[in-house]
Each structure stands twice: as structure tokens, then as C-alpha cells.
Image (cartoon, rainbow, N blue to C red):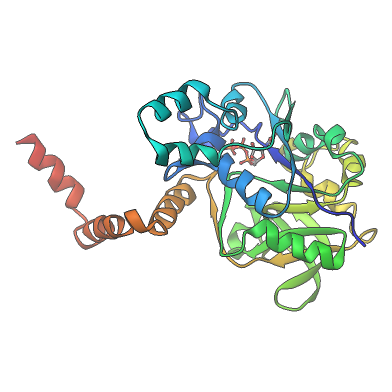
Length: 304
Ligand code: UTP
């Protein structure tokens, strides 16, 4: 029987350079999709999968990420005074069990593998999940819950995978695959950001993982990989052949919110899921697509 999955690591120490200037003084993971910051989606997904202990790997300027899950006494008192019960209810979702979130500091962003290694004391000898908050997955059954089901069945390491266009393999961690039943795929090898001609497949890892603690030993060697960074995929690759290693073609739609287009797409998709907003969003989308010069003409109307 596999050990239960109770811990999750959330690396949030990256610089978020693709979102400058927004990320100059604000963490990328605090950017909202509709009205909820990326980090809250990740914590909610983890809790739904049975995670009880969280470790955020943070860096400078990231304190808001921790404060977001604190009790905001003054704000709550004011809302209570004003009878704003719906808003108080919204805040309730940001509260976690006291003591369930710890933080560790990655002083210098040396790569995702290094960030995970920084959480080694928290991980100890337990299996753990990783959620990259800038990957959002819209799904009926949360993505990490889907991975946890596979983990309970197969034990060992399980990662969420998806097909990417051949010409984009140089942006992702790519798999060399073995047995494949169309949903669950055995992983025989991993390569970080290969050129399309060298890519062993077009199946890529996304930001959801269940890993065994042994990966920490390999990450601790601090070997630099693609981009001169300590890569998580390089550490994971060392486990292949020693432990079960599976990829899951998860059900759901993934949005790369670390990228501007992916982030904008997520706003639309999540807004369309909200009954109170869907009609208005659909109406303005139609306006923009049916009348491509809508914005221009609106601006010139204002100018006169
Ligand atoms: P990204 O590759 O998106 O990097 O990291 P980034 O720095 O956040 O963003 P860009 O590319 O400069 O725009 C993926 C995840 O890994 C974390 C990030 O916070 C993000 O959640 N990360 C990355 C770290 O925690 N530490 C690192 O050294 C690198």
C-alpha cells in the first residue's frame, strides 16, 4: 500500500519576468483570474485532493501570498458591521487550518528543481504533490485529484501530461513513452526543452506532479540543466527505472497563466463558467469578433 498523499509544495519564487511591469512589486501568483488569485486556485485544488500540509517556496516581495490565507480581522469586522454576509462568505474560502501552511525561502531563483529542493525538510520521507500555480486546469474533477487516484493505484511518481505542438517542444519537459493505454502512459525518459527534431514525443508535463521523496537526493547534486537552471525534470529522470513512473492525460483544459495569452484565455474561460457573468462576457466577445474595429470606433467616438 502506498503512503497517503498529504503534502504539497507550491513553488512561488520565480521572477515572473513575462508579466513585467505587473510583477515588479506583486507576485505573479497573486494575479487574479476573474476575482481569485492564482495561488488560491492551487490551494483549493490541493485541498480537494486531500492535501493537509502546504509549503510555499517563496522569495523577496512575496509576503502577500502568505497573508492571503491569514485572517483579516479589520476587514472582516467592517464587513460584519455593514452586514456584508456574501463578502464574508467569500473570505471564508481563504482560511486554512491553523499551522497548515509553512514557507521556505529560495533566496536566489536557481530553477524549479532548486525551489523543490529548498522544501526538503518539509517533504521528509513522504510522497508529495507539486502544483505550479501559474498552470490552471479547468476540470470537473480537479487535476490533482485525478493524479492522486492514479497514485493510489500504481504507487510511485505520477505527472499530468498533455500533447503540445511539435514545434513547441523546446518550451516544455517532454516524455519518452512506454506502455500507453490512451490515458495512462508509462514514462521511460524525460528531456527538458528539447528541440523538436530531438524530442522523443510531443507529450509534455504540465504543472501537477506526485513525486517520491527520493527525488530530493538527485536535486541536491545541483546539476545545472537547460537554461543553466537546476531542473526538476533532470532530478525526476533519475528515478525512472527505479520506481514506478506514470503520466496521466488528465481530463480538463489547461491554461498557461505564466504567459499573457494563456492568462487572457483563462479569464474568458473562467468568466464564462460564472452564471452571473457568462451572458455579459458572451455579448462583449461577440461585439469584438463581429466588429473588429469596435474598440477603435469607440475611442474615436469619445474623442469627438
Ligand atoms: P516559470 O518558468 O514560469 O518562471 O516558473 P517565472 O520566473 O515564474 O516566470 P518568467 O518565465 O520569468 O515569466 C514556473 C514556476 O516555478 C517557480 C515559479 O514561481 C513558478 O511557479 N519557480 C521558478 C521558483 O519557485 N523558483 C525558480 O527558481 C524558478
